[in-house]
Structure formats: structure tokens, C-alpha cells
Length: 270
Image 1: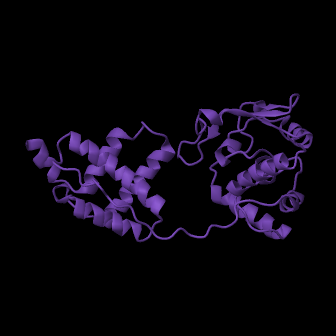
Image 2: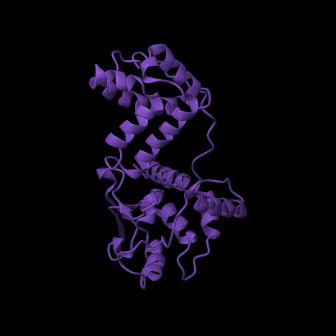
Image 3: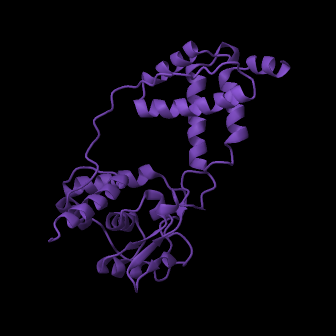
């Protein structure tokens, strides 16, 4: 009973902060933990005075509704899952007597109309024509690599010279670069199926064999300091405008690669 009274005297965001640090810190990837931290910040902003003792289906639903006023339904669902995980543990520890998340209704604003996420073949060629592929490592080569392979942003950052097998024209993907954390460094791939060998065309082989021949074999090709996704996307935006094509993100280049592969398969003779 004493533990229950102590927990009930806490604010919800205080409990969530303690729970997050106890169960999630150093137990999940840094990028995942940052999402829990974002949930905590939202909780402080939306319900700074909500006490554990005052948690009910009504107050919890109101919290979700407040969040949903400015977020799409899927984002609201993610917010709910984080909170629910903490409150299920609170129930098991008998900090709560009832589950306030039971039968919660997930709402959200209408999904925004998303821009086209890929380029057509002629648009991609126009973009590639704008790349400055001299003898030095640059974001131009990074954009080239993602365009030709469909790598994720962090996967491309994690590529080292020794990952290239120029003889067999393949690139081994077995790690990423953790550009979001303060520590930075190599990190595992998104999942086991992300470890793979990606084929390279002969032109890409020639370009990257020249680019990487004097680089340290086990160090990332494109990393020489703190990396920001926005930096590359802004540079890519300028290239798209210069090429006279629609603006696309680095992630969109991944979709472009996939769509062109599907197109190539669809036009093969039966």
C-alpha cells in the first residue's frame, strides 16, 4: 500500500521519465530511445500537472485527443504505445489499480498529401548529369551511390572501401553509421534481412574504385565529422532545381531505385 501511495503522488510525466530511463535507456538503440524522449517531452507539454492518481480512461483519452489535434493517426498510435507500455508496467507493480488505456480510441488529423517519392528514369538521368564527380569524396558521390544502389541514408554513410568487391561487382552492406547520436560510430543494420550484397553496374565500379583506392579501408567513405540528414537533402534539392526536375529527398532516391528495378522486371520479355 505504501508503494502505491508513493506512486500515486507522482505526476504522470515524472513516472514515465523514471520508467523510460530504467527500462529503455541502453536497452534499445539510441534512435529508438530518442523517440521515447520525444514522447516524454510531449507528455510534459500536454499534461504537466496530470497525477498518477488521476489517471483514468477519461483523462487518458483526453490526453490522446489533445495530442491527436496536431498529429496524424499513426503518430498518435506510436505516442499511445509508448505511454501504454509504461502504464502496463505500472499496473504490474500495483502502482495503478485499473488500466486507463483500455479501449482507448486513436484519432488524428487527416494524412497530408505526400509528394511523389521517386523520380522517373529520365529525371534521374538529369540529376546524375548534374553531379560533379571529380577525384574527391563529396555528397555528389554519396547521391550517386544511393541512386545506383537504393541504400538507406545510414547504410550509405556506413560504407567503407573494403565493403566494395570490384572484381565481382558487389557492395556488402553489413552495418550503418549512427549519425543521430552524440557518440557517432558504426551500428547494426535495421534488421537481419538488411545485411545483403548489392550488385553494382560497371560504371559505378570504375567510379568508386578510383575514388576509394587511397582511402583507409575500414573507415567510412563519406564521414569526416557530424552528419545531418538535412544538409544532404538541401544539397540534393539544389541539384534537382538545377536539373529542372521535381525536388526529392535522399530517401526518395531509395524509392526511385526500387521503382526502376520494378520497371525493368516488368518490361522483360516473357
